[in-house]
Amino acid sequence: MHRAAKTAATATAAALLLTACGGNAGDIDDANAEPPEGTWTIDGDGDIDPDLEEAVRDIAERYDGEAAIALALPGAESGHGPVSAGEVSDIAAWSTSKVPVAIASLGKSEWVEDLVPAMISESDNDAAESMWVAMGGETAAAESVNEVLRAGGDSATKFEAWVAPGETEWELADQAAFGANLPCLDGAEPVLEAMGDIIDYQDYGLGEIAGARFKGGWGPDREGGYLIRQFGVIPAEGGEVGVAIAARPGDATDETGRDMIDDIAAAIADHMPRGASCVDNPVSTSARSGSTGSSTTSATSTSTPSTSTTEKSR
Image 1 (tube, rainbow, N blue to C red):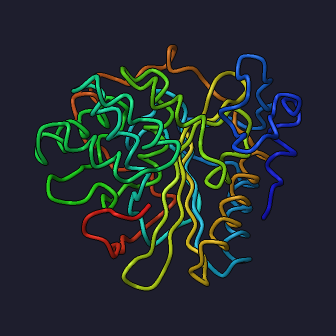
Image 2 (cartoon, rainbow, N blue to C red; image 1 turned 120 degrees about the horizontal axis):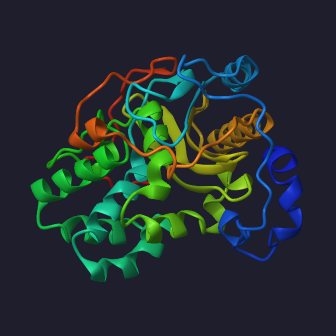
């Protein structure tokens, strides 16, 4: 398993890492951890750091697979702000969908907060189903999740009433924008806390970056491929950065997919952009109202439906 990300992103916070079983990004004292120095700036031109772009391309070639990333600063919206590299031919959300579902459900029922640690930290599907049902039916649940996405700057992704949440197509650029705006999203605090306390065996990839709050998802598709993806928000010089990464290994195995995700996270840590604050850069009114823009397309994708019809995978 590749763990190079620790070298670049956690050197200044190494003393804060706990080594006990289950220790992960959530065990880091974020208030004291020094964020990694930024080496480039995400700007309005939509250009990603060329060295990072090359690193993503090299990872895909090395594993005879597909790899992609998207990064965004707070205030980013669909089609405005995210930068991307690489491509994947499957954009099923899998269990990354649990983040907006959890936030939406919390906005409807206080009692579901007790389910958040299991749903997010452990990726428990039963907890996720309970939180979906708690929103008052399929249509109400989908509408509530879409409202959360719009509030977080994603005006493109749409959850459907009778489509399993994990089968929702979620482009990396839109997901990175949503991740960047999570810290200022109303009601997201319990979910963000759980995203910083991911169970040990799921704590790879972005989990190797100090202070990362993230959620992963993984599963097969009908073509015999296998997708692993993660998204969240990571600390950076000047604030935070929203990030979404995905890998589709050539051998379609979970082990190789994890290795690829580790390498992608390490590449981001080695080429960390400067961050910003969602307090200073809020999502615009147009994004919250649901106006749809076209997502940044440097990271292209062609959806391949997943095998499940009831999102009983991860």
